[in-house]
Every structure is written in structure tokens, then in C-alpha cells.
Length: 133
Image 1 (cartoon, one colour):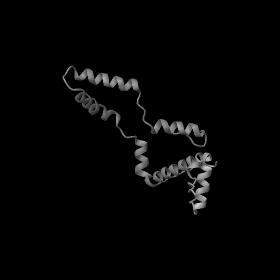
Image 2 (image 1 turned 90 degrees about the vertical axis):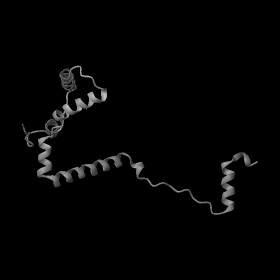
Image 3 (image 1 turned 180 degrees about the vertical axis):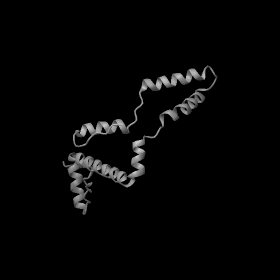
Image 4 (image 1 turned 30 degrees about the vertical axis):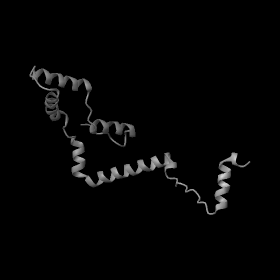
């Protein structure tokens, strides 16, 4: 397990190291190989597609659903800081989204209500120019 020295590494290097350590990736080829091995081991036993899928899921879940120890350490030892950081990130993302889409915050304009019959008649005349003659 290697740790990136923050004083020497760039931000992109630190991000890459954290992704490598924290984000579990599954190679499609490896997954296909594991499925093939399981199907060969199962042999030609009859079964519906649902039963075969359930068998594969049961066998693969134990291999693929292993918790990440680094994330477990963060949750166990720094739950308040982790929760606070996540809340700050969501807040920052919302602020960035609103800055990029300012039209979302614009208030809807209410149509002015017609106060008199004369105003109503004037608007009808303006809206229908063929009625003017």
C-alpha cells in the first residue's frame, strides 16, 4: 500500500492514487473468465435462466462485494469529518450548478391582471389586429 506524499505530489497525482485505492474496478475480461469458470464447474445441470443467474450471483457476490478497507477506516475513525466533507461537496456542486444555470433562480413573472373593461378591450384590439377596421 503506497501513500502519496502530499507535499511533493500534484493534486492530480493525489487524486489518481486515491482513485486507485478507494474505487474498486472490475475488469470485464476477468469477470467473463470467472463466469466461464463457474459455468464449467456447474456442468450441464439443467436449470432455468433464473436459476443459473441466481447461482452465478451467489458465487460472484462473495468475490466482488468485498468492502474497501480504506473506506471502512474512514467511516470507523472519522465519521463526522467524512460526513461534513460530503455535505460540503454537495453544497459546492449545487452552487456551481446554480452559477452555470442562473435562469433557474429567476422568479416567474406574474401576468398583470386586467383592472378595467377598457384595458381588457384595448388588449383584445391589440391581440387581434383584424378587428381594428
